[in-house]
Length: 230
Image 1 (cartoon, one colour):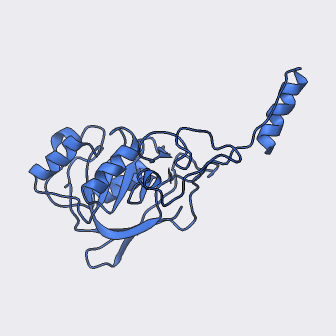
Image 2 (tube, rainbow, N blue to C red):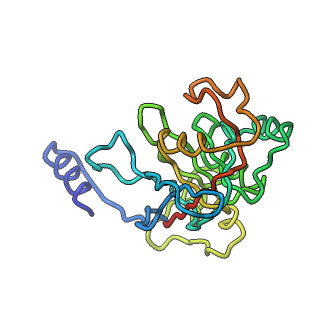
Image 3 (cartoon, rainbow, N blue to C red):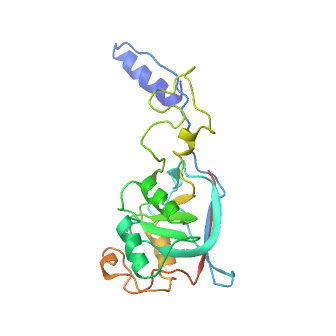
């Protein structure tokens, strides 16, 4: 058992309680160290390096922001602001003549489960997704597995030692993982991208809580250079 489990066991035993431990080996996801985000001019020249840190975590005491089970990947592409990333938001973009195919979708929190937001963007043809955090600087970490909770290699049963596990090439496992990389970012970082966008104006009903008085939904003209490692 690890230090935390040993501490809890010690306290329980000191209280006279019967205790036992069991070993589990679920598939876990951790952030890599090579993730990066930058804003480029339309000709590909550097414009600004954007932070992937959490402004509210000044001492960097927390785990760096990341989406658990998001695949590693990268893209250099135009961005499109998709509001909350719901079907109705994509319908509104379609009416404006804007699509996300081959582009990076920039969403803000509030559109439901993050995995659903990422999965929907992938269905629309996006190559990556960035989801903005709270206006107070908080970044909303989370899981983006599809198809419900639980270890993808042991769906419906515990990942105990000796338990049967599905392989990574199993179709049931493949369906659980998003097809495109994604990352939670601060509202400040997302706004830096959104303020650089042209295209049709941001719909008035999307303005509430955004803090952007004017601007476009994209695409471009700036490019976003995004790499994510898990």
